[in-house]
Image (cartoon, rainbow, N blue to C red):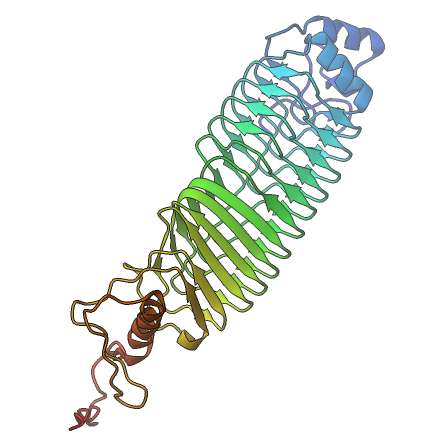
Length: 386
């Protein structure tokens, strides 16, 4: 600890109040009254390492007029319910490594600075519903053992939940993320609802142990993320990076004026990608998806090399840039099928797209893996059919 601790016992980590040498929770009634009298709205509040029951916390909030200034509560332990409705924190708030034994409700609280809850532990429910934060919020490495509610919250300078653990149901519906939210390496033990969210979001290397309902505007990334259940993603005006994502259940991706990259994705269940407005898929290279349906998408810049199951692709109202002379694919080896420059019907266009996908995924030669081993001849040149 980087502060003078309470003299009441060697195990008490609460910061000592001078001139008493004891933390707030170990003062006599007269000493406590004197300490509370020194608190006032807007003044800094330092209760690092202090154990705070529900009654003592209520007295502190009343003494500060519900408007404490810079607040330091690192390593504090809250043994009773925490209810901060209507409280406005006029400065930065630090709750790093704090422990919440019971309900932690910040519902309706206001934070005019930054908030840090890095490494905090919540044994019961956490509510940030409707909270307004002017600065940045950090929940890096925090553990939420029960449900966590962040719906309708506003984070002026963004939210960071890197390597956080959400063991219960988590909802961020309707949240405004300011400069964006990052959940890199986070784990969600139950269903997560991240719908109608405003702002960018990153779930790189995250693990969804149950169903995930996600959304974003501006930018969305979930590279190397893993979903054990269903993944439902809706984005608007977004660049979407789903490279090497792995989904065990159904995948549903809804794009509105957005572009998605699924290179290397493994989609074990049925997968559907739909587009509205100016929406496109830019890469399906190395995608492993036995059933993949694409609707209303621009595929003119999409790469298909290494697509594991081209026969499982279903198309409707998609567009694909064909070469001026048509597409040449084969049904045997190398079978020939020619599409001329004539105006193609919608059915013909779909056939041409599928043919192009098959050509890209199956007929391209594999990338070289290096020089042949010493003393061994390389592969024989292919014989051109007459």
